[in-house]
Length: 357
Ligand SMILES: [Zn+2]
Image (cartoon, rainbow, N blue to C red):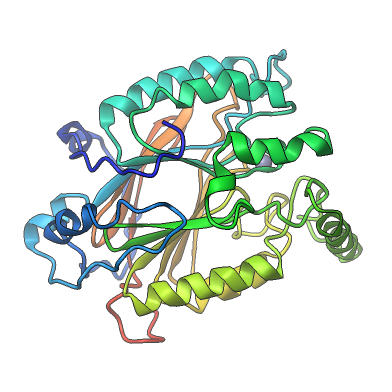
């Protein structure tokens, strides 16, 4: 089901509780507002279109049972990067279709509330969507797509068609970034290639060229044509969206194709400015992304930065299920993807400006 507006609200299968996870032992773990009863009470109210604000969940004390019951769950897929092409290095373009089929069949049995596809759905051409999108449509859960650089790796005239194919023309302002609410949480999806060599608008391509030239002069590792910037307009929108989440005492997960931290050859061109926005808001718990196929994890200023491994790499697959609890994000990795427990150290219920570290 591709970017449907209804949310299913299925219970998590108990088998996931049996999957071993590697706890990082992060400090500051404590329960906060938004337990199971809140989730159930607000689930129907939050089945709103993804580009519309939903009512905030009322703050209620967390019952002990809520710590063992996820508030909601979602599947995570990154860098399918399908093409009907021979392998190159570790990239098995053609195999991605079969890997995705198996992943979708498995996720369907886990019944996540929704699935996030972190971008680079195809590698190099528009026609590849005709292979992968019907596979995503087999999912019973809504799928939220993120734009990646390879999603624009095609002639300029075809790029706007990608937005439509991914349902992104109907979300937010139709520019590839949007947000949606879920059980007292807000999920904020960024377009990390908005200002880039692959942008649609001429001025956005020109701005991308200028940023890249400046970064190259400084010897920055991320001065690469496959990286882009969120840009000032989208950062202002992000700031407003996160401020609203702060006021509503929501917790926020920010999602983008490109990493914002740590800095390397895959990081957003304006990662410093984006992180400054994130760090100014107490609601922000985590930043999830793909693009760097090796994956990785870091924490900075109380925000978890989690990069998911690319499905395209190697003959083995990689995807995950994320379970959102009041006090932690629990990620169960499949294939090469690692399992992790990320403690929530910046509860939305904390006083204004008191991001816990
Ligand atoms: Zn990418």
